[in-house]
Amino acid sequence: MILSSTSLPGTLGPLPWGRWRWPGPLAPGPERSDRSSSLLSFSVSSFYFPIPEKKEPCFQGEAERKASKLFGNYSRDQPIFLQMKDYFWVKTPSAYELPYGTKGSEDLLLRVLAITSYSIPESIQSLKCRRCVVVGNGHRLRNSSLGDAINKYDVVIRLNNAPVAGYEGDVGSKTTMRLFYPESAHFNPKVENNPDTLLVLVAFKAMDFHWIETILSDKKRVRKGFWKQPPLIWDVNPRQVRILNPFFMEIAADKLLNLPMKQPRKIKQKPTTGLLAITLALHLCDLVHIAGFGYPDAHNRKQTIHYYEQITLKSMAGSGHNVSQEALAIKRMLEIGAVKNLTFF
Image 1: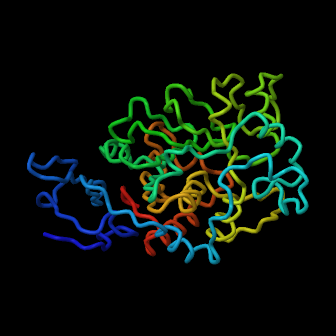
Image 2: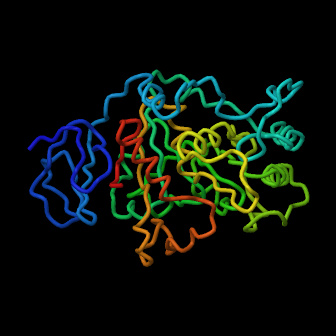
Image 3: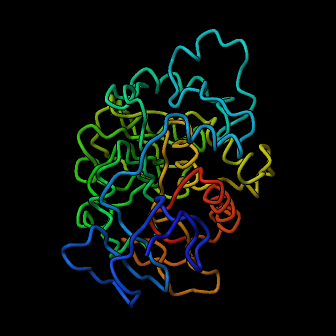
């Protein structure tokens, strides 16, 4: 039975690759097909997602072209990481404060940029066509056996404190970039990353710059100004740290979620790190796949939301994230083919 690139019943987006061959009849899973089959098939609450053995063809500029349907006049001129030269003798300061700009935080930022780096590794920069996967933290990655498939991408982007050690079979072991903010930095950089992993700071407030400066320069630690105490000791190489351009937070909020850039202090809605990472990938890559995105139904109070810890949707209350609106944004990306999904959504 051959399936074209259409949606399976109950899913919101297209299958991850163009043509599929089911190894056998649909049955409750997970099940492994016979040794002669080139696919694995899994069932999760009646959703099936095959894992292909061969890479999907990569077409240069495809993600940029499709992303223009989401972002309008889309351009790759914006740098991915901030660098010092952009903040000396600035004639036009940023229009917004963090997290959508750097207005009012320039002095702190300059001190951080003096001790970090901004380059993209040559091994990625030189690729004619970049194949990327954004690995979410969702519970649906459990028992997915996607690890080997994830490791084959040119760029693997991970989020916050999501562990790799002990979960390699489902989430892989390769990490090209890990997006984080101070309160989510509770992971061992040596254990959960590779030696060449880029640690990408997503700054939501000026204190985030202050925190990373004290960590990297071994200055007196800051303990106040955070909704959760960040690490006081964090063993990282400053040359592996990057500062994400707030431009990506701005367009994720504005173009994908229709959020106002200036909000009342008590509201402060903002994109999740996951949606931000997808936005970044659409800017950096030519082919973008995602895995482990999506939350349980709002009425399901018992289903855990992460593959590695026992917390539920209740923990999202007061987070400033509109997960329903983000689900619609990701659905739209799937519908136009800007991203493709390795897990059900």
